[in-house]
Amino acid sequence: MIDQCGTIHDTGGSFMTNMDKEDSELIMKAAEKTGFEIYIKHKAYDCNGRLIPGNIAVHTGTKGDHSKFWDCFDKLRKLVKG
Image 1 (tube, rainbow, N blue to C red):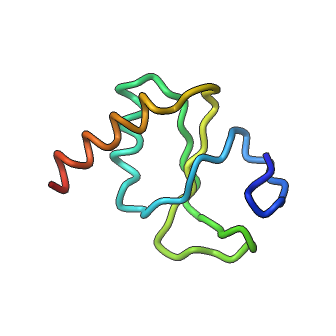
Image 2: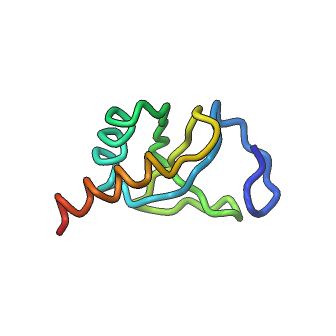
């Protein structure tokens, strides 16, 4: 996988985004509900390779449109965080 800065990463899946680590549980719930293959790496880096404290990196092995997953995540997040 090549990120937005042109850095090549071997993630075992496609990089989706970096997120606050507090969202880990909701990400995995949305993956379970939608059947998406989602991986969380507990260290997140910016496009210059610097660690982003308090963030996780979200990856997927599911190809195609991810909107079903993100819609589910957004609904779960609104239920929890208001």
